[in-house]
Image (cartoon, rainbow, N blue to C red; front, side, top):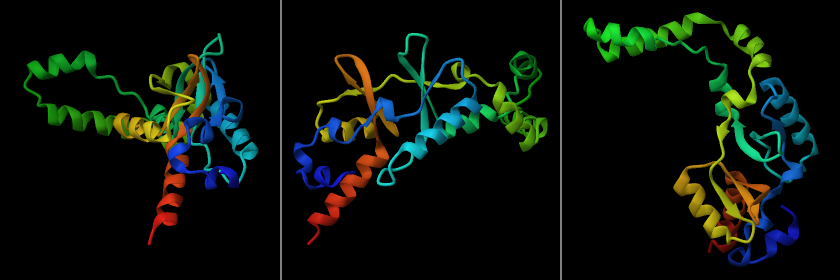
Length: 191
């Protein structure tokens, strides 16, 4: 945060004052791989000032440059997990009297045995963003008060929200940046 923004009254601040502009955030195409996502994230980290929290996600844009999804750290790790599909067999197993608990245990063990961590990491360069991204559905207007951003992040249990201006994505506001700002205000107002 720059010094001017920190000294403003937090109640008069709007999303624009805290957001990261889209040009400063890592964005990849839907055709990009997870390896491309990592490279974009690293490049954006280096360009980000040391006074900001590090990026923990990349945005995904479609062929029209519209932001359609996001890949965060948890999504990234989930996408590397082997996908065990016992769906065809589940119905037969259920008819045979196999319990849900046993089926769940079998799925868990099958995933653990399928690949080792090196194989999983090697697979990342083949996984496309469009196949693993979380679709972005929540946003907030650039002129909204920060209190609205806090409320929406908590209500929707999100780590970030897309910031829009006239229905066009112009940036992202992150929980980590808001948290830092609010903690600073708590310290300032402490007796």
